[in-house]
Amino acid sequence: MSESPFTGVYGNEAVVPDPEPAAVPAPRTGDRRAARRRKGAEAAAAPVAAPTGRRRAAPAAGPDLAAPPGPGPGAGTGRRRSPDPGPGLPSIAAPTGRRRRGAPAPAPAPAGQGNWRRIVPQALVVAFLAGGTTAFVAADKSVRLTVDGEPRTLHTFADDVDELLDAEGLGVGPHDLVAPARTEALDDGDEIVVRYGRPLRLTLDGQSRQVWTTAATVEGALRQFGVRVEGAYLSAPRTAPVPRAGLTLAVRTERSVTFMADGRETTIRTNAATVQEALGQAGITLQGQDTTSVPPASFPRDGQTVTVLRITGTREVREERIPYAVEKTEDDSLFAGTEVVERAGRPGARRVTYVLRTVNGVRQKPRKVAEETVRDPVTQLVKVGTRPLPTSVAGADGLDWGALAQCESGGRPSATDASGTYGGLYQFDVRTWQSLGGSGRPQDAPGPEQTYRAKKLYVQRGATPWPHCGRRLYR
Image 1: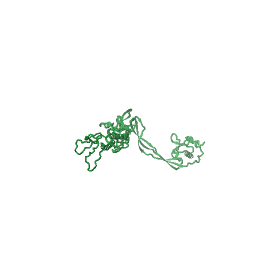
Image 2 (image 1 turned 120 degrees about the vertical axis):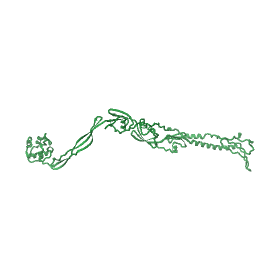
Image 3 (image 1 turned 180 degrees about the vertical axis):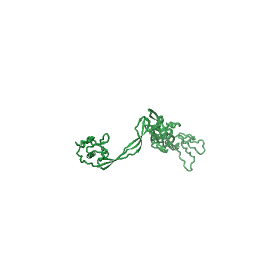
């Protein structure tokens, strides 16, 4: 079955756009640590706020802040009320009016001097505590941390992003994204984004590779790699999440493929996995021995042109001859140059099957596809003489044998007459030749042997074997 585009594979699923990932904060500039120190200093220098609780009204004081000498309301109790030290200061215990017996009476202090001695130390303590509290509050920062799209707000005393990640137990690696950079200083209200890298085994148009992505979905990962998904086949839905452990994803983008078939040109857009599948989408059928200019199981490339080969073929069986071998052995009973066939060779036969094809109407060279031996060849056995030839024959050495050979055969040792009966320099018939000790045919023997046999024949019969040229011997 051919794999349809993405909408065909996941066409029943509603394609929900991948939610936008958390925005990555832009890098900050300037010395933010210095700004944080200035902020703390300004907070420490701020005036201390007055307490909001109620207090009793203090008796009216004169210019020297002393109590009036005369008895006021509520006199006669034996005790007197201590003056109010002022807002924000602890009240000072008033004297009871009693003193120990025998103790000398203290000397009266100047008016207002005792109050100031008590007020100043207490005011210093309050100011010190207020400054420390302000510095503590200034060091605490509220930041927004987003990890893989999940935001949360937290308080931290970390000075930079790296300290914050360590405090939160967030380890990051070389394939992870952290923004701002880990060395950036933190300030109140900052936003930090962490996106973990995910391994993706991506097979894109038949080419496999290992990549890393910080996207949370398949569509986001493909967009990150610049892969066009419109009309493409995806092995997983666009909205499928990419887990931290990784994902294997096959993508076949839409490509343009041209087919040349039956004299027509057809161009289609396809995301097919094989040329065979693309042929089906183009409505082209392969029958019998038909094939294509590229393997039908190969991956169709963008812009590729594929030719369809219409093939018709027949088989033809032919019988062919198998030549026989010749085996020679030396024989010292034969004169040198003499060869005697001891066993005649016989060729063998084999049956060969050929395929005769026509491709798009053009006949191709026959191709052998099968071979069967019908008859084995028989090796020919030949004896080769090694005995030296005699140099002369008594009674025939003084004759002109060259003139006789020239007259009979034109001086050619392999000459044969038109009837095939006579051959050689002196035109022997086979029977005469073999009666003189020759073997085989005279025209197959070397020239010196033929001359030797001719001399022997002359000794036996004179010049009569050569009725027309015999007289040449005597010139």
